[in-house]
Structures are given as structure tokens and as C-alpha cells.
Picture 1: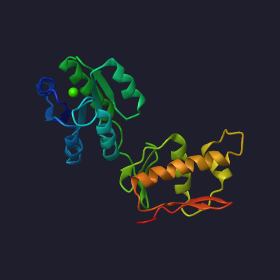
Picture 2 (picture 1 turned 60 degrees about the vertical axis):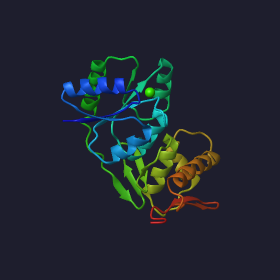
Picture 3 (picture 1 turned 180 degrees about the vertical axis):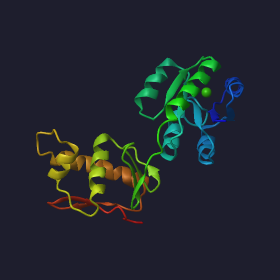
Picture 4 (picture 1 turned 90 degrees about the vertical axis):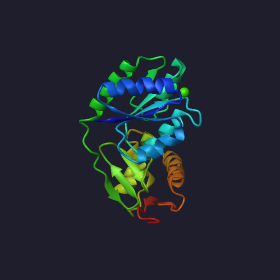
Length: 228
Ligand code: CA
């Protein structure tokens, strides 16, 4: 019996959704505050999260960001205004679907069912360990010290290229070839700029180590075990 967690401060809505879910054979849990969501997800056993954007203590967007750093649980947003939909879609929060209020609980349950069906056949991610990093090559995701990194395509490409050859010094030209194969210019600045933002994200994930090393005049290398 899949368990659905409902994060919604309007109890009448939460009760109606919970009732519709239970009638269709789901188990339903309910929390009123955004701060309660992550601990409940981390406790395990939640198969899908229904997340109101307008929670009293924090926005659903912030809740989702925290959840995504820790879990792949499917998320369906409840939005109060059509105008919020653009944000749901535009923020690349990794949400699976959204429903605009007012909605029919039966419609939402149909979305839940469809969402779980879509997710079901996905094979388990094959995480490959590399020091403090874990790489999911098929999902194009990288975790650092247990935290999912939210990287742009280019940051991801750079990190992947460096991690493929731990300790090796890769020149800016080599990195350009790997990450920007179609670029016309030499692109030293491009590499440097994205290395800088990548470093900032690694620092945000863990202040203890600086795994990317600059080799003046030569390029960059990575020490995946830095600070391990
Ligand atoms: Ca609300």
C-alpha cells in the first residue's frame, strides 16, 4: 500500500485529499508545516509527496529543494494561483506534476496514480563511489558528501571530466573538448568561470574541503578524497 504524505495547512483540503486517497487504497499521512516534511521523508516509507506551495512557515519551493537534496520521492505541487505554475515549472525543482486549486480530490488521486506508475519502471540508480563523490551516470547526477549537487549542464560536465581521471591535471583545452565540443574559441575564460561556480557549489555542500586544485598555467585536477 503506497504511502502518500500531504503537506497542506488547510485541514479541509488535506482531509478531503486524505479521504480520497484512502478510498483508493493508499495510506495517507498529513503534516501542516513545511519544516515537518523533510524529517518525515527521511524517516522513510513515503512513496509520494503532495506539497502545497503556500505553507505558513516556508514556501513549498524551499521545502522541495530540501527534499530533493535528500530524496528522489515524487512530488506533486498544489498551487493556489495559475501564476505559480510558471514558477513550479521554471524553477527546475524536480517536481513531477502540479494541480491548481480548487481541484477535485479524485483528479488529484488520478495524478498520484499516474505519477507512481511513471516512476515504477525506473531502475534503481547505480551510484558509483569516487572518494567523497557518488556518481549516477545514467541519471546524470552527482552527490558530494551525501548531498545531491544541483549543477548546470556545464558544471556537471566539468566535474564528470575531472572525476573520470582523479589526480590527473586536465588542461583548459582538454576540458573544453570534453564539455564544449562545438565551441569555436579557446574558451579559457569559459572553463575558469564554470570552475568557479562549481567550486562555490561544492563549498556550499561542504565547507571542509576544496577538492578541485588549480595548476597555474596547466589546468585543473580533482582530489575526490580531499577531506575524507
Ligand atoms: Ca496553503
